Amino acid sequence: MSAEPTRITVGGERPYQVVIGDGLRSELPAMLGEAMRVAVIHPRALRTASEDLQHGLRAHGYQTRLLEVPDAEAAKTVEVAASCWSTLGQFGMTRSDAIVGIGGGATTELAGVLAANWLRGVRCVLMPTTVLGMVDAAVGGKTGINTGEGKNLVGAFHPPAGVICELSALETLSQDEYVAGLAEVVK
Image 1 (cartoon, rainbow, N blue to C red):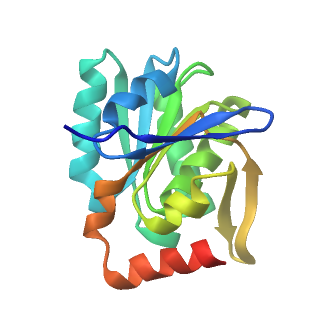
Image 2: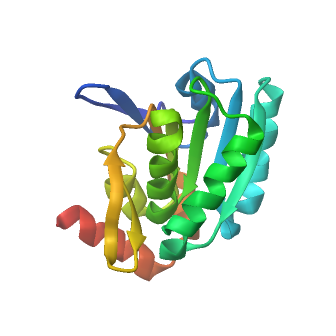
């Protein structure tokens, strides 16, 4: 029997919950609200996990589209965002649909930028898979992508509809990645 997840409510203009624990995929449909279409933004390393997530969403009746993006900071470019927006258009994403970002901080920030700007803002649920993503990038609603002139120069504040921190995802991190995330906690 698994332990009850920890739930933290983040206040503000649009409050949302951060749910922390294991076996949390069942939390996702409630966070998606009335969405019919769900675009899942993910890096190549999480293709299998994203396909599993897609199957679960389809079993709940959602139309889904996977959007694979480059790893790490290479995902946070105007070119990648433009490509994703094109795919969202082809998919027929409407204001009532949703974006799910699964991955580290760069992927969840990109997902937030996509959601903040698509049709001037759609629902976004973030599923960070790194310590840094869980304690920084996925919480607070700050989103950003890089330009040739600097890091995070284009972005918005777009609070997610919810954040799911699946602790088992941390088991695959290298020690260096884990320590770097803990350093962010201290900071």
